[in-house]
Image (cartoon, rainbow, N blue to C red):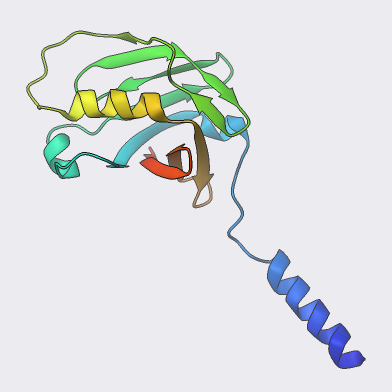
Length: 141
């Protein structure tokens, strides 16, 4: 009997001491994040973004999202509820001529497919997910 109680207590401690907990507060989005992975394109990440990596900035108090898609700046309304996020609403985007190829378009079109997010690595990594597929990954700046 004592062995069963010890085993139960041991496994409970192991289970509850796991440091793999996800952070899921919307305010954890606040700040600037830099893209370091994008799914889909056949071009290597550094080939898509040779000069400047895209960034995204969240202001949850003002309900705004903004950033730079490697060439042009964008801004729009933040649509987030829990871990669900929606980038399908039109955003204002500057119209500078971009010579970096497909990076800008790839970033913006992938962003529109995102349906949810999660924040891992103690708040240092932001993952954008479409359905159940991780499509984009950002690092906190």
